[in-house]
Structure formats: C-alpha cells, structure tokens
Length: 323
Length: 283
Image 1 (cartoon, each protein chain N blue to C red):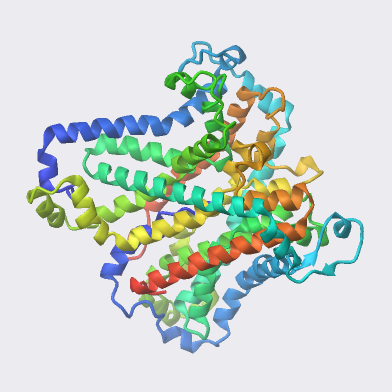
Image 2: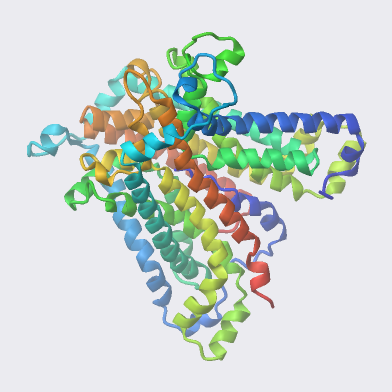
C-alpha cells in the first residue's frame, strides 16, 4: 500500500524530454527467431499469481456484495441468498455511510494538499541551500519515508500523548487530548500522514527541478521574480508532468489510509467519528460480521479509485508518456 | 550543485535564512524518530513522567529486554523476516521474467497487459481483505505464513514489473544479439547475461516489496486469527497497547526494533544502486 516511489516519476522528466519516440517498441530481431510462445512462457508465473490472488478476489468481492453474507453463512452453514442490489440499498440508506464517505474525501483532500504543499516548498528550499543543510534535510526525510506506517503511528500518538508527550508541553496545551475531538484526531492523523508522505513528493520534485536548465531560472531571477513567482510561472509549468504523477499517487495513497487511522484513533475513533471508508469496510466485515456490507463498501472504493486511475491514464497519454 | 542558478548563490542573507530554515525543518522531521529511540532507552520512571526531557542521563535496556523476552518477539521477528524475504525473492524473480517478456518481445495484447499492470497498482488491497480471507480459509491457509506471503507477492508484482521495465530495456539489444551469435541459448542469455545486468534494478524494486510486506498490518491482523506463533512484528507491537495503561517504553522499543531493518535496507540498497547499469554495460 505504500508504493511511494521516487524512481518512476523521478526519471519521467528526463525520459519525456530525451527519449526518441520510437525506442519504446521492442525490437523485432531476436524475438522473431523464437517461438511466439516465449513471452507468454515468461509471463505465465506472473499471470497465474495475479489471476489467483488479485483478479479472482476482485470478482469475489463483487459477488459477495450481492449476497447475504453474515456470520450465519460463514460458520453456521446457512445457504447464501442472492440479494441483488439489496446491500447497496442498505448502505446508501445509512446516513453513517455518507458521513464516512464525506470524511474520507475531505480527509484525503486535506492530506494531498498538505503533502504537496510541504513537499514542493521543501524541494524548492533544497535548491537554495548548500550541501550540508541539504544533506541534513534529505536524511531526515528519508528516515521519515522509511518508517513503517505502524511505528510512525505509535510514535506520533506518543508525541501527542496528553500526559507524557512532549508536544503538549512545548505548546502549553496541558492535558488536551488530541484523540478526543473529531477534528483534532483527524488533524493528528494528518500530521503523521504528511510526515511520512512528503519525502516522496520532495525527492521527486527536487529531481525534477534539478533537470530544469539553470539559465531558465537564472533569467527569471534576474528579472526580479520572487521565489513564489518563479515557482508559479516557471517551475510549476515545466514540472507539470511530475506534479500530475505525484498528485495522483498521493490521491490514491491518501484515499486508502488504513493503518494510521486504525492505530492512532484506535479503530476509528470514539463512536466511529474518525472512520474512513477503508476502516469502515473492515469494521463492518470483521468486527460486526456483515461481510456483504463490507464488500459493498469495498466495491464503492474500488470504483472511485478506478475513476481516479482512468483520469491518471488520460493525463499520462496527454503528456505523451509512452507505455 | 552547479545547477543552482548563480544569482541565488550570490544573495547571502537570503541563503543563510534558507539554510537555517532547512536545518530547523530537518530537526523537526527527524524529531519523532529521535524521540522513539530516546524513549526506548529511557528508564520506566522517566517515560511515565509528566515532565518529559529530550535526553536521558541513565539509559537503560529494560524496555528492549521486555520486548525480547516476554512477548515472543524473536519469533515474530523471524516470521516477519521469512515473509518479507520470501516475498522479495519470489516477486523479484517473477517480475523479472514478466518484465523481460513485455520489454524484449513484441506480441499481441502487450499494451493491454501493461495497462492492466498499471491499473492493478491502484487496487486498494485493503478492500480485498474480505474475499482473500475466504480464499485463505477455503485453502486452509489461515494462521499460516503462506496467507501473508501469497497476497503480498501478488500485490507487489504489478509495481515491480512496471518499475523493472526500464532496467530491462536499458540493456542494449546488441548485447543480446552478440550472445546469440556466440551460441548462447535463450535461457543462458536470460539468466547469465540479462539477470546480472538487471540485478541493481531488482534490488531497487525489492525495497518497495520489502517495505510494503514488512509494514503490513492488515493481513497479519486478519488472517492470523488464533495461532499467535505465526504472528508478525506489527501484531507484537500492539501487544503493548493495554486498555488501562499503555506500556510506552515497550511500544517505543518494539517500534525501534521494527524500524531499524527498514532503515538498514534503505541504506544498503542505495549503495547498490550507485553501481548501476552504467558501469556494467559498456557498448
């Protein structure tokens, strides 16, 4: 779930600029010589694994969402009955579902905007400092990046602990409990998410800025442009392909936040006030044994992310990225 | 560094301000990790103190001792290593073959497959916990490490294939032709020439499958339901969360133990990546 990589996007600027249009098609030479089966032979293990553990579960997820599937069917041996869209009707009639959906969208949006703002700002900052401060910031960011989501979550909860945490003391907040209120709990999770996701944006955008010819930025600077103006009018337009990639990656990733919410708000907060779709589906299925409702929520998530992916593919195509 | 435009280099006060900001931000970003390690070494009395200090004068290994002795932590650690290690090796080999197929051959449905690999990366694996739970149950895999290994291989493959493409493509076609002219078989070219050349890329890819598997918390929680001897590290960490009073020393020590291998892996791989393809292949 944390496929946050700098590698692919980082090569994008150089690739789109320098790659001749025809090199992406594999050469026909030796491939012709062998049987047409060879590529499929090489692909077979991957396709078998993906069919069994990705495609089939997706099909099952859809199927379960149309069935009556609760504890009675799982362990009681009762026959499953086809519900049609019944589970979806139940779900859409539940005001909590809409509340959670809204919270998920707003929370993901806040995470994406904050991550991008912090990541881009620090990327620009990196270009304006000498090697030592740059190394310090890079190392700190790599540390945050490499930290597992679960340990990051526990550490941040501890940092903001009302009794023993240093943050409340430094800010003079007394024994203010961050996880008690809905907004403050979401804010706390947001801090952790931004902390562990901004390095990806920073490193990627920094690589992109370094690929911009120095004269361009020099010219803008000589013309008296402010750093903000340089970013908005020069860097951002040139970096558009990279920004598209990091934005979509962040959307996909932040929409699926699970571990942080689960660990930091103890399974979705007081009375489920901090639930997001992912945790909601999990709680429905595994805490209250309503597997079909949980699956229906999963399908909704899948469809939303599929829509995001299609937008991503279109944007990639428009940028001329060859697949 | 020479890429930094000259005028920016000249404005001194501005740069000093930027450097001060960078250092302060670096400290803020590193602070949670520092606090984690610090708290792991603090004696119990100092952790449960409402007057937390950013240093300790009497470091102690008590928390680590609690982690390693009481909670079967070593077992969890080994389980995590087995799961992550198997996933890394298996997905790297499978992805290498698949990436070779989609980059060095031309065949029908090639583009379709590539788009599918891309789309597959976006699938929220958390949403698939429910059907995977039933799949594992039907195959009697619940409570086994296999129930963690198999899904993670599947979920790391699409990205690994996608990322390896570039590395496989970078090996010059001429090398392949030369190998065949010298009488190498297809298998020999694949394993004795292409594989070593792509190895740095495989290592880079493996960082991501390692991290996502090592960090996995959802499958470990959902599929290992009764046999705790098959649990992995994240579960061991949650043991220290107690309803009445969290054992913060234990939590921080366990978090430290869990974070260190990932950091080590990051550092190791970065060194490997430096000796990339550039030196290995000479035209």
